[in-house]
Every structure is written in C-alpha cells, then in structure tokens.
Image 1 (cartoon, rainbow, N blue to C red):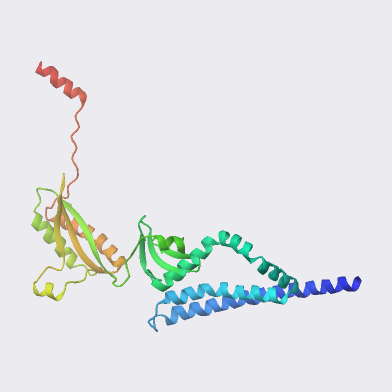
Image 2 (cartoon, helix red, strand yellow):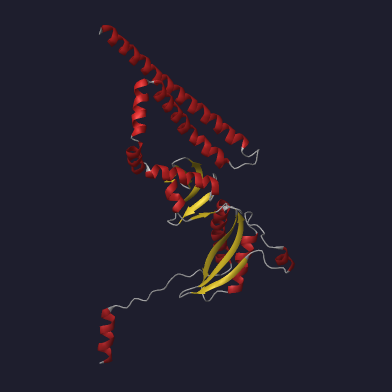
Length: 294
C-alpha cells in the first residue's frame, strides 16, 4: 500500500509539474507572439500597403489557439484526464447541448468577428458612428469584441455580434473626403447675397477646405463653395454652406473655425444673426384695458 500511495503521490507531483510547465510555456509563447505580431503590424503594415485589420485579428486569435493546444496536450498526457476526455466525448450529445446554450453568444461573437474580417464594413483606424450618436476610431478587433476609441479618449467595447447588427456610418470607407454642411442664420433685414458671399470667402480661404469640383464644374466656373438658402424660418433666413475637407477630423475643425470667422465678419459688415422674440401679455394688463374701454 505504501508503494502504491508513494507512486500515486509521485504521479500527482509529476502531472502537476506538467500542467504548470505547459501553462507557463503557453502563456510565455502567447505573450511573445503577440508582441512580435504587434511590432510587425505597426512597422510593416504601411510599408507593405496591407490592411492591418487582418494581422490584428490573427494577433488576438493567437492566445486562444495556443491555450487550446496546451489544454489538448495536458488531456493527452495525463491518463486520468484522457479517460475523462473519452467519457466526455461519449456523452458529447448532452454536453454539446449544454455548451451550445452556454456559449451561444461567445460563438456568435467569434463568427461575427470573422465576418467583419471577411466583408470589412470597417477596419482598424476607420472613424465610425452609430445611430445613437456614439462615434470614434476603430482601435482593435478581437475574437469577442471590437474596441473603439471615442473623441474623449475613452474606449467603447462592443460585442462583435452586436456591432454586426448595427447600422453604422463609416467616414473612411472608399473615400475619406467629407462634405461638411454648415448652417448659418441671418435676419430678414440683412443682405442675403452679401451674407452668402462672406460665407463663401471665409470657407474658400480656410486651409482645410479643398476644391472637389469635377472637370465639368471647373469648366463652367461653378463656385468651389456652394451656399444656398434652405429655409425661411419664423425669425431668420437659414443658409447652408457645403464645404469639402479631407477626413472627419479636418471637417470638424473646419466647421468650428468657420462658425467663428463668419460670426466676426457678420459683426464687422452689419449682417445680423437673429434671436427669437417673445411678447409677454399679463392678465392684469388685459383687465385694465377692458376697464378703460368701459
């Protein structure tokens, strides 16, 4: 009995060491390979003119693959676990049903991640916006989720299955140029043509504005910046300028700068930006008026 127990203790120690060593090697190998891939992606993706999204997805899959092989190796090397694995395989029907329900979302995220990789509705470094107003730059696509860095430097983590069902606006797909719509309001007493000319001049002189006219439009001497009257509101005449810029960030800066510079020009040249007027009638005033009539 003593020999049997000592053998069992020896086997237990041996298998424990095997598990620790295998897990350690898997962890080190995963970290090293991820770092190597990270360096490769950052250094050579631009040089090779390839989409870094593919490499990033592979980088994030490395850990899962290595740990899966490590687990299979441990099950194969330890007799008890090997027999347990055989028993589990024999009852695979019931287990598959349980695991299927338990990991439905996980597999859904993985499959959605693969579809994102194949069909590329967006890729790393794209600026995307959701219908609820969330907006940011795609930073990473993993097996489970997509990480987006918003403009407050926070990370939005969205499961791949959820983002696959979302309607998104991609500011970088196919063509990064953006036509920014910038609205201004002037009073009815102001000179509309003069206001439109001020807006057009300020926009054309901005360094982030670009000339996106076609050859036909240039031949016909059509203006670089289009400004139109879009509404006759209760208190104002509403104008809209259509200004082209390279990329979402430049377009945002362009809009902010034009709102400021156009306001200064309007003030300088007598173009009024109106505000709503309200007439308040007090009940006492009405009663006094009735008494006077009597």
